[in-house]
Image (tube, rainbow, N blue to C red; front, top):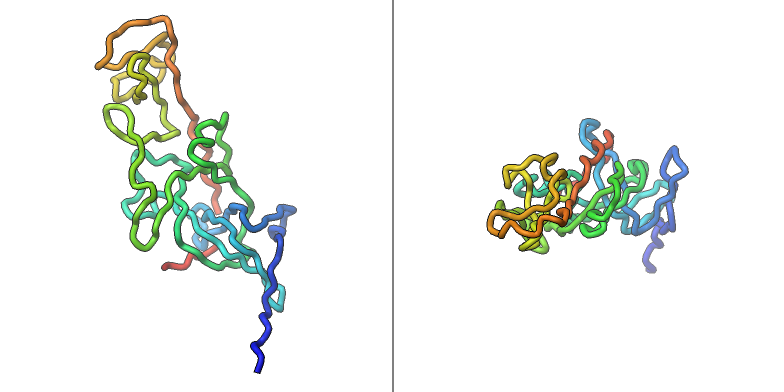
Length: 216
């Protein structure tokens, strides 16, 4: 006997229920959490398909927020930081709220402003083991912490390292008014240059959001 034909058909795209937003494989989307008190989940669409009754399902690869990972959220994690996990799933397309953008870490730091649907990813996360790739990143300041793009940092004119004003016993306002900055380990010379300052305003609060992410 021949094998039964599949009743599922692949779709090129899906229009988000109640909107004119169209999503395709490769897009990153927000999916409603089952708990309305939680922010929406973020997932990358791998495939879209419909069954014989035209129920549309999406095959997704989940992004995890730092607080959902082993070890939880740490000081250097940005408010809009996500980890691309190895956790794949199938969900109803009806739970998609809309599209979002997950930037590379480098591109995120270049944004003039951070919108509600802007996120960034610099780590891949193994959900089963709690491991990260890469397992090491550059650290800065005397606190030796990785860079958090939500924090203000100032560059030393001499050694070119970056420092948190609070670690230097300075307020953000003091730093912004300085014509030059030299860290305690460098000579205080060349006072004519202005320090290069990295600063991002706090991103907008998360959108309140019914998807149950299956446990591995």
